[in-house]
Length: 153
Image (cartoon, rainbow, N blue to C red):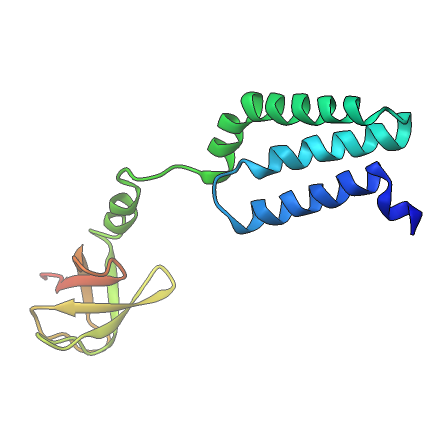
C-alpha cells in the first residue's frame, strides 16, 4: 500500500481524472493538465525529483502545452463549422435523373433511385414506377427528400 502514497502514482491518478474530465466536458483544456500530470509522474518515477520540482514540471508542461497546442488541436479535432457545406451537399443532387421505384403524386411521397441509393421524393406531377424524373430541388425542411418532375420527351 505504500506504493499508492508515492507521488508518481498520485500524479498518474490525477492524470486519469483530468482525462476523464476531458472526455466528458467540452472545452479541450483538461488534456493539457493530463500531459502535465504525466510529465510530473514520469519525472518522479524515473528521476526521483522533489515535490517542488514535480509541481514546477506540472505547471510548465501544462501551461506550455496549453499555450502552444490548444489552438492547433481545436482546429484539428473540431473541424470546420457553418458555411455553405450543407447547401452544397443538398444541391449536388439537383439536375440528376432518377428512376421512380414507388409512385409519386401531388401530396403523396414516393421513392426514387438515384446513384444506387433510394430516396424519398415529392412532386407536383403524378409519376409511376419505371418513369424517369429530374431532381429540381430538395425539400426545405429535409434535404434528404428530393423534389422531382418528369423529364419532358
